[in-house]
Length: 159
Image 1 (cartoon, rainbow, N blue to C red):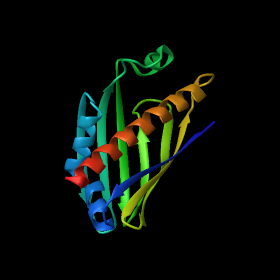
Image 2: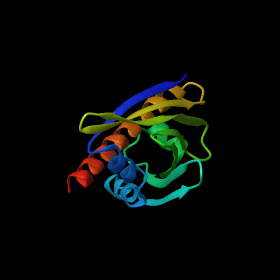
Image 3: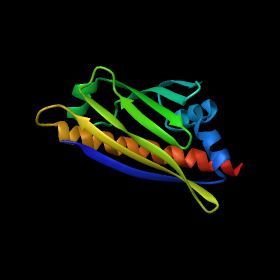
């Protein structure tokens, strides 16, 4: 079973400004702080073909359903890697040591005076009986994280 996420984030600004923000290490660190993660590490590397944004964050498991905390423990490490080529990125999110994967894309689209970042992700958890529940939980967590990212981005662009 796979759970699909389709989410859009809208930013006021031109393509160059929004793309620069999305690729900015400081922006990604600000997003982690707004998400109140326990610890984080952000890197942005460039080569001739792509810009790779890697965000590793550790979140507390407090508030998760008991079936989830049994799987992840007291803390959850999440590593999100975006490989940007122009306005398109391949996205991979992993929770090291856990059975599953999250893969998809992010695309920046110009729409008049704003830019929309369209994110498409497929969440696949390979755990008998509770895999679907875990996928839904992860999908909900990802959407909350993306909403926070959009809020931080809009505030940053308006200042």
